[in-house]
Length: 423
Ligand SMILES: Cc1ncc(C[n+]2csc(CCOP(=O)(O)OP(=O)(O)O)c2C)c(N)n1
Ligand SMILES: [Mg+2]
Image (cartoon, rainbow, N blue to C red; front, top):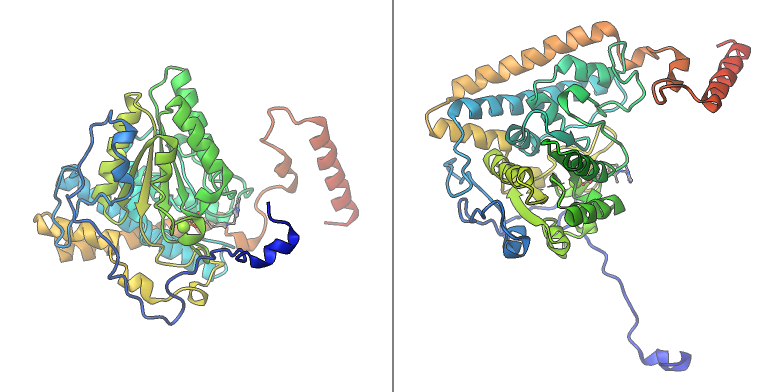
């Protein structure tokens, strides 16, 4: 053991502090990205031993090639009609986001979050799951509700916290909850949905039920303890759950390196836990569908959980409270080597002769009109900017079947104080 005086000869310790490659104003060059060719990754049997498929955590499952052809063993071979429905749901999600973003900028609500560029990661997955499989999303999977044909107007009521809001204005805008769509309440506390999803899956299995669960979180959220405890439970009990990590490269202003992306992939987290891991091109709706379908079949047959990393890019700001021009190069979005998920599915449909530019243009007008009409209706029940739409003391209700004494006391105290203040 060196004593204090000997330490002068030792090398000073230092830390590695990750730094993103590009900052505002930088010219972006992604040419050194290693992108495996579409169709080049094998599709293991659904009962594959996780130790035999570690390679799948370090590559990218891709179905659509640069020309828009669907190739290789992961091609889910969906009918053109189904693909067109998927494309429409992706376009509708983007139109909904654009409209609600504008509503926030017009002061009609306080907050909004878009999923632009990431639509395939929610909608491709929703199409591969059963409609009543239980989903535990993060705040960027509004596409699942839309793919499950949940009414846009109900989502808008929530964003406006108006009289129609089933959550009675108690949640932040966009933190939807829709039991009838098997869509678990979105939480602002990152990664809490991971243990919840694994717990649901375990309960489903313990009851002898057949519903599986799926969770989503961002790559930044994998740094949370909840992510790791969920992985442990999922692995130990081989819970019937699909754990999705949406690697959109950014966690607000922190790049993915701060969550560990410089050291390894996020799919590789699966290797350490001994569960199946897949890394997919998240801007390829067919690859997302195929990976989810594989993982769902595995879970349904009691072969255990799957972690899927969706490699994608957050094209816009984190939320309406963010300004990405302050911390990243605007060129990243333009130069993203995996393209745009809607443009890629559209190109595929045109290539197989099931679609054309005119129909795409007509669909864009149609979805914009559908969103506009829903917004007009939704605003009839009020907007957040008009103030509270629920009686003040209703905030104490609905948590307990019978209100406990301490909540009654708090409610009465609040009412008395408000009366005394003349509110
Ligand atoms: C426990 C917790 N820590 C921090 C935050 C603040 N916060 C909200 S979103 C976010 C970034 C999350 O990034 P990522 O997981 O990559 O998801 P993305 O927003 O990219 O979809 C942070 C740090 C929070 N909501 N909860
Ligand atoms: Mg992220």
